[in-house]
Every structure is written in C-alpha cells, then in structure tokens.
Length: 414
Ligand SMILES: Nc1nc2c(ncn2[C@@H]2O[C@H](COP(=O)(O)OP(=O)(O)OP(=O)(O)O)[C@@H](O)[C@H]2O)c(=O)[nH]1
Ligand SMILES: [Mg+2]
Image 1 (cartoon, rainbow, N blue to C red):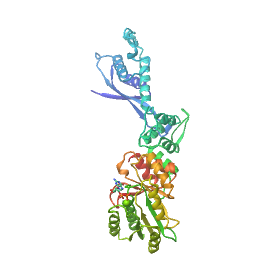
Image 2 (tube, rainbow, N blue to C red):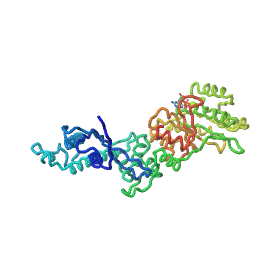
Image 3 (tube, rainbow, N blue to C red):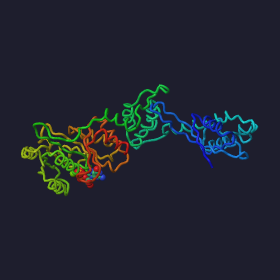
C-alpha cells in the first residue's frame, strides 16, 4: 500500500491536490491539522495534512470516503448545536446529505461542512477552561475576564501560569510585557517566539533580585533570618554561609537566638564546626550587641532566629526586642516555604513586616511542589526582592541565588 500525503490551507484544497495527481480513485485514510511554522507569531495558521491511498477501480468511490470522514467527525462532535449534526435531526427526518441522490452529491458543500466542524473543534481546543476554581478561590470568571484582553499564545501562556498557581492578575502582568496588539483580533498576543522568552522578559521587568549576599563596604554586614517554624531558616543559613566562605572567601560568623528548640543549638554548632566558623548563642539584646562587637573582624554575620507563628505577636515581639541590640543597617531575610498557599504566605509577609523591615524573600522546598506560582505572586504583590531558593535538604549544595533565568525555569517546571 502506497500512502501519499497532501497539504492545504483547507481540507478541500489538500484533497483536491491528491485528486489532481492521483485521479478520482483515492481513499482518505486519515487527516491531521497542524500548526504552520512561521517566524511572525501573529501569522501562525493551521494547515491540513491528508493521508491518501490510491485505490483500484472497483473499490468504494471517493465520495463514500468523504461521507465516512464526515460521519466520523459527527460522531466525535459532542453536543454541538449546529445545523449539520445528524443527532439533531428528528427520527423521521432524513440526514441532509442522504436527501440527495448519491451521484449528485455536492462535494464542495460537504467539504465546507467538514471544515466548519473542524473549525469548531479547534475552537474548543483553544478556548479557555470554562469553570475552574483555584485553591485560593479565584473564580474562573475572573480568569475568563482577564483572558478577554488576550488572544492566541498569550492565552495559552496565561492558562499555563495559572495552572502553576500563579495568580491570574500576576500572570496577566507578566505576560503583558511580551505582548503586542494583534491587528486581526484587536487583542494582545505574544511577540516572543517562545513561552520561555516571554516569562523571562516579564520576570526581568516585574520582579527584583538581591543577587548573592556579599560583605558591605567599610562596615560589618549583618543578615538576620526570620520566618515561621520549620521553613528551613537554620539549614539554609548554613548553606549560604558555606557559599560565602567557599565562593567568596569571606569571613563569616553565626549567631543564634534559638535556645528554645530542643537540639537547635547542637545542630547549629555542628554545622559551624564543619565550616570552621565562630558560633555564638544569645538570649537578649545586650548580649547581641556584645557579641557583634566581638565579631567585628568578620565580613558577614548571619543571625538565626527561632521560628515563630506569624499570629504570635508576643513571640515575634521577643525576637524584635533581641534584634534591637543589633546594628541599624541589619538586613532581614524572610524565609518562606514554596508549599504555602498564596494568601497564607501574603498574610505571613504582612504580619512579619509589622515587626521587621524585610529586605528580601528566601524561598525553600521548591522540590516539594509542582506549582511554584508563589515564587512570582509574593515578590510581585509585596514588591520585595528575591534572594535565594532552597531546592532540597542537602547542605550546602541545595541552594541557588535567584535570578530571572533560573526563576523562569522553575516557573515553567524545566
Ligand atoms: N525538601 C526540602 N526540605 C528542606 C528544604 N530546606 C530545609 N528543609 C528541611 O526542613 C526541615 C526544617 O529545617 P530547619 O532549617 O531546621 O528549619 P527552621 O526554619 O530553622 O526550623 P525552626 O528553627 O524550628 O523554626 C529540615 O528537615 C530541613 O532539612 C528544602 O529546600 N527542601
Ligand atoms: Mg532553626
């Protein structure tokens, strides 16, 4: 069996090409609708690819294959309220195409119907998901409202980001950066050839980054890690300490205010002795002041604090009181897990901000989620820069300095 493939802008055109070359005795085995490659994003179109077998004289004629193709499409069309659907006809009504003498079948009309049905199918594929309520209660109507401004691949990208739990409003603003006006639809579509470039551009414009921590000019740099319980403050503090020592050859000291959790001091002391760096525990502000003076020959001091619920104002106040013994220029890093839901995480940031002047967000446990939208949502909404991302439990390997390139990859799941 020899199979020939023909292409056309319409199914009719593709079949006509086959007929011109092979004659009337052909059998349509299969057809596909494929994206036509184009360098201009707005000009992307669909084309039809038909797989044709040349048949013997006595095999069923071309028209019966068209009918077969037609009825297959009908079967696959789910509750389409269109005038051509056989299922919409009354029982005593004859299907439209059978009313005619088979010899006089109007192929052009038949092909038109087929095209119409295919177009409808395509529309079903490209229309936004109808009813979807995200875990944060964001209603699909809201998403659909946003999608009205966009067309083509911009819609696909917004939908993809929303599925990764990027808030619809945030996804819209990120995608918008790479959009231009599509003249045909008067809506916005992507102007970048790939999703990756679009997300990268959006992130570069909308999100800020601290870059790798470093020593300060002419003064001791002090960075304090705060955040809820168990998010990974201590382990990631030591990952960063290790990076500063090994990659930047800096002198690092660690102070812990966590004398509360059983085993916390031992854990921190063990890490410090592996890294061969000074380690101190303190319980009040006076003690902190004194310890900072003792460590004034260091380049950077990292302060670990005890994890506190953001609803526990009393305990947060305690940490604030201890830190008041520190320097005026002390940086504060808020550590958060990627597992938090957006609203919960926003609440944590807002409540922590009432106590501390936060300089950056450090996210942990990205390895434990497939929907890391929070990595965009929080910096976008709070305008806080991103510093590091913890990617696993290994100390010191599993940490990355965040930048637009690697954030794009995490958001896209690459
Ligand atoms: N899977 C995964 N686990 C992590 C990551 N970062 C930290 N952890 C783990 O999270 C757990 C808690 O880490 P800690 O560093 O003790 O957390 P903490 O914030 O200091 O905890 P408290 O001091 O009790 O508030 C440990 O088992 C870490 O190994 C990460 O990126 N991925
Ligand atoms: Mg800790």
